[in-house]
Image (cartoon, rainbow, N blue to C red; front, top):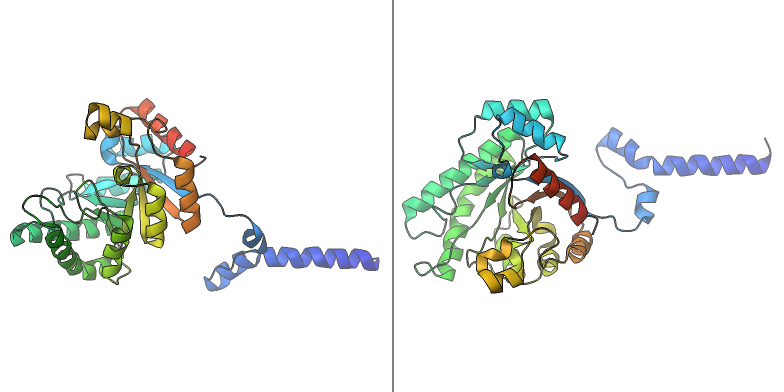
Length: 311
């Protein structure tokens, strides 16, 4: 072999070895070392798994057939409510047979019995429902329970909502630790946690890794721009909810009508949302929370989600 060929082949072999280092390290030690090619590449687009809300499926089907439907349509998962009336055995069988995952659940009691309620018995009941949701989610193989932390109204002041909700959530931290399921805070027009900096502080107050944020892109548009929230919340973001909002429909038809608009027909700047997600290094689940329907409608939603993350 000529000397120059030897040197060339040696260089190629060395490069291949370095590029493969991540895979070897992962296999041997469980520690992932980024390959050179990955280190030198530009910031990647968010790696997103697509999900939707269980209630969006409007076809009259069994649990198994609903899971099959979503899998056929290209979804990666589905979010369930908890507590709910679904048979867990059927749900787990459908999950295992279809491969459709359950990334998390949404607590179903935090509106009826908010953690900020003046009545301690109602708060206690809500805490118990979240505890059940944490255990349910563990069984489903999910990682988060979405919790609306409190509601500010004529009977509950802002400071009361803040103090009460944090006190109740702290009671749940030992359960979150046992289950390995995180409590994901979301604001849903509850007149509470209205700025991204305050939302970040609310999470940080717990000083606990099992509390984070469930960021809803459409919900915050009424208050400020989603990119600002993403940058402020940063690594606190555990999952994403996707929906649109139209200022024109809000102004012309009423506040809640602002949500009655299809993806890309509202005022969300999806390229800027993607840019902000890239900046904070988000990678994970994004669930649609829009008007559902039959197979055709759910396929359209999934296709729109694909477009969002290409924006």
